[in-house]
Length: 240
Length: 396
Figure 1 (cartoon, each protein chain N blue to C red):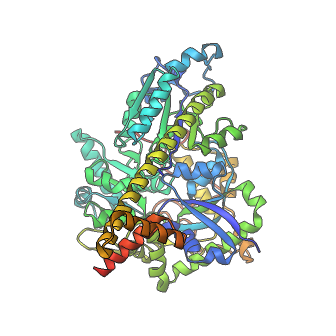
Figure 2 (figure 1 turned 45 degrees about the vertical axis):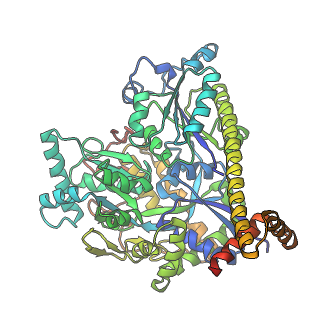
């Protein structure tokens, strides 16, 4: 099964939107450590819907599932980036507040460069919802979700986005698991059918007899019927 | 004795050889260690999974271990290095087109890094005058020797790495393709990716990392300081297993066996790995080779023993290029991240007196001898620097 993980890069830039056109300008405009934090809790709900979220994922299905979830939760500004070429240029052009990226994508290192280039992101705290909150970290990582947050973005806001993404990623993992199992079942079916054909031809058996023989052998050998079928096909190949 | 179970993260590169050989060829088992090696796709993942305890230990870029301990670019988690997995091993590879441009402008042999750096400066000035896009170079991570070696080299010729060219982070598996597509004009990366670029005809190795810096701590075995304190005995076993594996790898008779084990984990031909271990690399698609027995050092010349001078050097690069502020306190923290004492204790040996060659422990191809006690003096000695203003690059 494909292992799914996401990394969330969350940048506290909402308060600066409108004043700055992008990270590079932010870098120039926000130099001091004493930038006022206008992140008032009373405006939280409204601000969250305004958060611009970018999803970087090579899996279009998962990206769609994530996007749907975020839209259902009221986030209206969600964009997907499928390409890894010029990733940073795309991210800069979108200028998102939150970046979701599949942890299994090597492109994650490219995003790290972004945190070097801008003073707006003073301290991206990868995977740490709060340095003291190890339970949240573990929950996120167990689900395959990690988070970048920046000093100043409220913990409660991160948690709600994180929870949503954890459940969506788990849902996708289940879906993928079912799909994989269905594929496996189909493959097994094919192997068994081919082995049946070999037996029918070699021993002049009917289809039912061939299947019954394989099943009996599997039971005697304490093996799965597909394993017996595979052995049979391998042996048949050798005798060719 | 019961076996200790360990999860160790790594990136598929030749300098993970000590870990791979330790696990796959029985050195870890002999020390009663049951190690699960977990292949990762990004340094960010390795760092984060080590930080939060999903890994007990990791194959990590040496500067990342220091950056973690300093809290640079990331949350501060004290990470220590009780074992040095490898020195050197990088190379600067350029497109055949950039190589011929540099070679044409070279005032001497372009195999000499000062000659090539000056040629690059001329090329950069020429392109600027003609209004041509700046050259782009790939490297693997903001906190990496790849970044620092590219910068050290080009700055020596008068090229400002932040103003005159573009430096972009690229995951190693994307390097060759990016060079082929013209997305980058050159890159600095570890083995085997330079050889892959040469073999596929899209790159020419310009310099080995060891021509820029004679000794550079490339990857360390990184563990959390807390974990090391609580698992002192297990850590000792791991250090011994890695020491045994490193000695095995270093013996020329074993190169093939070691390369075979490493290549299996990396998913490349064993011959590519053998070339790197032997320091005998094809540098040009036309078949030209270059030999340097310092190309990669695993286990040899005291390479395994963590050297605080190396940590100080890496911190000096962070300070020179504005990734970290300059302070005595940070310098001391950086040095303390490399733990030769734990290495000595694990092996039951007396502290070694250190290596005498090069004299300053680093051996930069240009500049004054490095004094780890005077990092501000070191940074001040360079004309091109960017202290106090963290900025990496412009992106395409």
